[in-house]
Image (tube, each protein chain N blue to C red):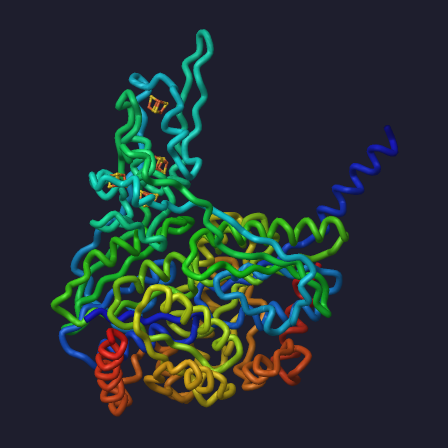
Length: 287
Length: 300
Ligand code: SF4
Ligand code: SF4
Ligand code: SF4
Ligand code: SF4
């Protein structure tokens, strides 16, 4: 089963829920897909066994073969190629802007003179290891890099369907989030009971409805703010999986990078129950 | 010639004095919007730009009256005309984004609009259609004009929409000779963050004294440095872990980054959000005093 943890708004406790859930279950694979700001390792402190450089293919033009016909520029939907045709005695040139290239392969496929080959461009790294018996994988986007969706796809390629896969997704509602939660059997939305939390959650709900992924809500810091989330979930018939009250102890454990189930054992059972609830929800959803 | 020159330098002067301040955080939920809304009250003669187009929240505090409403289109998306498709499967093999199913249906969410399928299809069965991916607004608030946006859910290209919001906010600031553009940035370090930062005069990074906060601060500070944007740090809820706060002070000092303010944890913050008013107008006490002092430090 693949369970993803998401939240429209950042900082609501996504990683906290993901990590504590992982620690409460057996046979878990943990994928941190928040490649811009991966944090789960700060809590799970995995021992890293392997490091792989993540790349996307970008074109390399062999100017000895190229006749500056312009086909590649025409094909490229992202303006990643510019062509300066040659003048009488000066050679032309083809310029590739690596940061704009999505690696779609179109230019090399359609170059009539087979002048384009592909070379890898580094966008980040993927690290794999273990935290106890939890298999841990995360991606780290390079600084100044904008291509997070391909890195997320590459992290997700590690998915092992034999295990309970827990995916910590990035905040928001756009591309990177979709890439992370897509294909999950169930999604846990983590929110907090303020108008920000509510508004951002309604956006996340829209995403999940669009993707047709069954989901439930965890209300974090439930004792601060108002009851708007409970109300909203009641009206929309969304299951509330758990309330986590605001407690200085939880906040303080978090600040030190200690998952709170280590100190508060009673929560392990609650996280267990979430999984059972999610199984029921999936069955209901299929009908 | 003389006058012309004076006019020229006059314009240069106006442009020079406009200050663009981006409030960013790396990690989400550290209090970016709260701080932006409070600065919106304190700063005189400014324009607000909500660049967290993924999960825009500033409007919940500043309550804008929408003056102009525009559609944002970006990119294309592939559509198969099934009556022309012969089922050769060329498109499925060519698509690098797994966006075409084995029965030749396109998943609009996975499609990146590269157009390879439409070029390769021997029966010209794939066409590329415009993708409507969001809206953006120019609004009035009690505190001045505000440019904001809503990216359609499940859409890409928030970077482009952020750039659009920024451009219009700067244009208004130039036209109306406003002194500040206050940018509420998105979390993370990716495309939309880079778009929020580019060309800003100052980045205020707001963080919290947690391991995650510290880790993300480090990464986002690197991004600011990478793009040569001067950065200053605000530690929110500093009293939740004073040991970590000290560590943040030390590491930022080592890197030559100023800590502008330490904001204490206060329940007034979430109450002000529930009320939908800027903290600075709702609350009192230490946190409000700190934010006012912070503004005095950066306003010139
Ligand atoms: S399509 Fe090939 S031959 Fe034509 S300009 Fe591009 S690289 Fe050169
Ligand atoms: S691989 Fe695709 S995106 Fe990259 S340059 Fe070629 S056509 Fe453009
Ligand atoms: S446009 Fe590109 S991404 Fe979209 S379906 Fe066609 S080949 Fe795939
Ligand atoms: S390439 Fe064209 S004809 Fe072939 S399967 Fe795709 S859409 Fe159909």
